[in-house]
Image 1 (cartoon, rainbow, N blue to C red):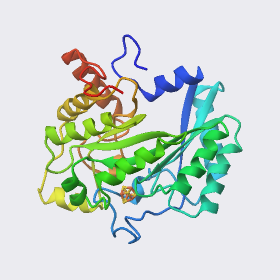
Image 2: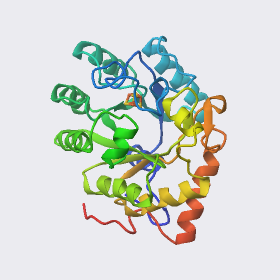
Image 3: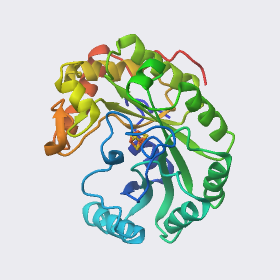
Image 4: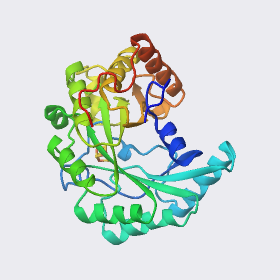
Length: 312
Ligand code: SF4
């Protein structure tokens, strides 16, 4: 829950509160694809997607155990030994496989004593009951299990334009079914999508507030080289948000989210040589983005939930 003196409820604060120490996510990458790429739902993927949003330093051909082991060692060197871990299955759709394969990759997390949770990124149309049942089995064994669903926007026309190949209803359905189980849900949204105005973005935030969602990742739209969206952007079809505009829109959303919804992320970044725009979406400038959001919250005298429309 948002504590006195804090302006939003970050994942870091939530994990510290729950586990009493630092909890670090180890991001791993596996040879998944996505139904929006392989033709099951559509071809080509979301127009902003490059390599399933996999960070360049991750290599899906490295065995999963080695990726986890390396991540643990790196974090311990940086933060000391008194630390716990989540394994974050990040790129592409990490529930898009057969039962045996999915079980084997989630089981691998159980081999590491200091791993207390798993975090599985996927699409809302990739969560059949058997997947949720499998994921819940890890929660019943004592792991904290988050499932991250990309929504990106509550505007169906935007979803069509960016070729998400699922609807808002798929997202609502996945959230409601997931929350019948011992699982936690994190939703991803993007601010600054083509042709969206402030009201569109607020509507997306309101939808999240109205649903039993536990956490959110808010990203600024960023244009990556080699994507379809890069061509549209370079043709001048739309603009991206300036840093100040992004901070304003992010604060609009923070103000309406319930105070107990964990904010997992407020930034989005790629390597400088892969980025076209905006220039603040790099690892180097992540701190500047967080500072701009903090300044905007302070300027308005606002905080998470101060305009929350729904009581949960
Ligand atoms: S759903 Fe994710 S992995 Fe699939 S195309 Fe869209 S962004 Fe890429």
